[in-house]
Length: 102
Length: 211
Image 1 (cartoon, rainbow over the protein chains, first blue to last red):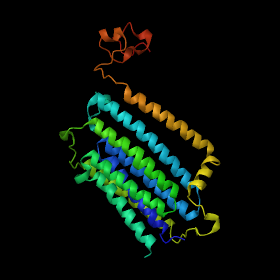
Image 2 (image 1 turned 60 degrees about the vertical axis):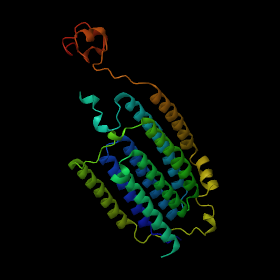
Image 3 (image 1 turned 180 degrees about the vertical axis):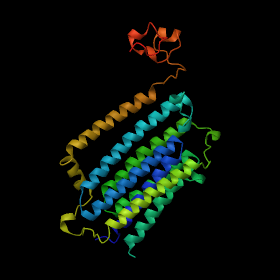
Image 4 (image 1 turned 135 degrees about the vertical axis):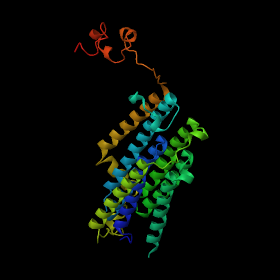
């Protein structure tokens, strides 16, 4: 038995997800946006771990492991794209990337 | 309040404060400060995983996230070498307020759903002999290599592709040409997009008329 209510674990996950979502939609610096995506993925991981703890399922931990692996791949490719775009336009602000609008 | 609950609220509050500090002005203005507060947030989350008996994930969180991913982030931030005048972004626009309200709305909806569905749920007893190894490295590793063997191998392929893709993307220098010049004919008549398939090349004036 654990004395932490499941609802509080899930609320913490929802709060972190909301913070990450606010970061993605309000910040215009692409680096901070990528970091906010990582916060959202971590919120989902926390939810999976909480459910696993309550049901006694190890599957949730394996799924969270896969999410960590995919997040690492996403960060590597995303940052490489940031580098390529920065070399082209000398900016990290998504508002200034308007090549398709010309 | 038990010690477990006190630890949960301390670690959870720390994770929320560190994540919020990543975005809000005093620290969030500079990407490197954002990255450092995100690392702090990842350590709080690792503590939460350990508290919830996910020992392997707790270690992985520190090694993979706080170690590998955030080192990548800080390296890229330092590699970009942003000048101080590039770190503007303090304006509050209507669009941002609307976006913040959207995030609050999503959180509110999630909170309502959670309150409706999780009342009175009780956890399994980990002192039970069947759960003796719950969340430990042997237990999670055994499941990873038996039940989830195919997804596990696919993940390794994904990581390989991501590593190769990252190297290719970061190495090649992209060149931006002001007007894309696809064929010599298109260049002469200043028509950027119409001459992309061979038979159209001789009359580039009539835009798209040949189709």
